Image 1 (cartoon, helix red, strand yellow):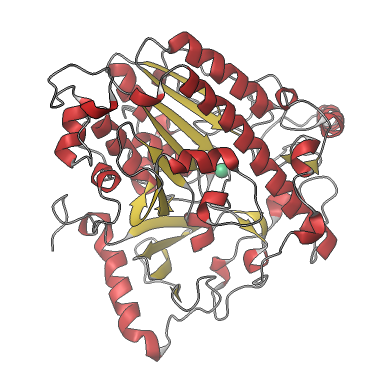
Image 2 (cartoon, protein in one colour; image 1 turned 90 degrees about the vertical axis):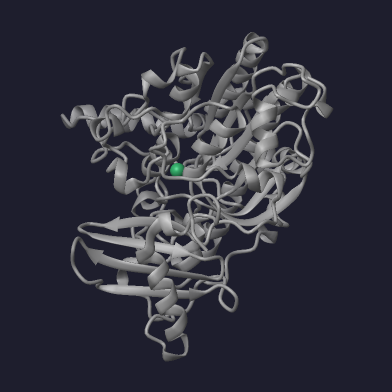
Length: 502
Ligand SMILES: [Ca+2]
C-alpha cells in the first residue's frame, strides 16, 4: 500500500473508506492488521508522557508515530474487570466481572470478544500470554483465557516472571503448600521475592520469551490479515528485570511521591490496602516502609518498565522490518493505572483515584497525519473495540458500550466525550467515579441505597487528589454538576453527533 492511498488528515469517512479499500486512487488496499500490546500494571510513567526519570525509548518512538491519549481510562482498576471490559466492549456492570476469578463466559456466554470479531471476519488471531487475565507465574491459577477468541492457541511462556533466586524460593513455597495439603488458589498463592535484578538475558524471563515468540509469529503471519494480542506481564509484581535495566537508574536520584498520605477528608473506602505487595517475601507485613525500601521498589518498577519497553521495541522493530507498519494498527495500553506510594499505598491499583483509573494509551494507525500528537480527549478503554472495528471496517453488533474514537485519531483536539467512567467495589459497596477532565467525583453506595460517602477532587488546583472537596460549600455547584454527570451515565456523556446530545 502506498501511504498516499489514504486521505490525510483522515476524516471519519476517510478512515472507513481507507479501511474498506475505497481510497481515492480506487485501488484495493490490504486489510488492516492489528497489533494489540497490553502491558500489565503500566501507568503513564513513560518518557512520552513527560516523565523525566524513566527510560522508555521504544514506547516513546511508537508515540512519535501515533496519537497519545493523556486522558484514557480503564473501566475498573483491576486486571480482569478492565481487560474483560475492553475485550468485550461492555462495561463491568454489564459483564458482571468485578473480580479476578470469574470467567466472563459465565456471565455473558455469547458475547463476541474483540479478537473473536476479527476471527469471525477471516483474520488469524492469536494471543500471547496475559491478554485475558491470568496469574502470570502459574497458568494453572486463574487462567481466564478465552479459546473462542483465537484461531491459534494462546501462547504461554515457559520462563518465569521471577528471577533464579525468586524461582528457587517459589518452588520451596509450592513444596510447603503441598506438604500442608493446601490446594493452589487465590487464597493460597505462593509468593516469592518482590524484586530481583538477575544478570540474565531478556529471554530468560517470561516477557523476553513472549517478545521472541511474537516476533516469530509476525514473520509467519506477514502475508495474512491478523489480530495479534501480545500481553506483557511486567511491570506487574514481582518487579523482576535483568540487571542491565536496573543499571539505567541511580537509586538515590529516583524521586518518591510527595503525597504519601490519604487525601484530607476522604472516606475510608477511597484508599486500598497494601495486601498484595505485603504478601511478597522480604516485604514487612505491617507498618510504614523505610525510605530505602520505597526507593528500591520504585527502582524495581522503573527497571521493569524499561525491560518491557525493550521487549515491545523488539516486536515493533520486527513489524517495521517486515514492512507491516503501513497496514497494521498498533495499540499500546496499560490495563489500568498504579499507585507507587501515592496516598500511602505501594504497588497498588484497586481504587477509583485518577492515578489508578488513568493509564497509557497510544494508537498508531496507518496513514495518520497526526503522528506524535498528544490528545486531551477523554477516552475510555471500552472505546477500543468499536475503534478497531471502525479502523478495520469490520461490522460490530451494535451492543457495544463504547464509542469509536477514530474521529479523534483524525482530529486529536476536537471536542469529544463529556466524561469518562470507572468503578471499584469494596465488598457490598460500589464506588462509581467520573471525570470531566477537570474534576473527579466518586460516590460509594450499596445497591439501591443512598451513597455512604462521596469524593470530589479539583485537578486544576489539586492534580494529586489530596483534598476531598465533597461537601465544601465553595464547590457545591461543581459537585452538583459532577453528581449529575455521574448519574447521567455513559450514554449521556457520548460525543455530540456520536450518540450524545448537545
Ligand atoms: Ca493489571
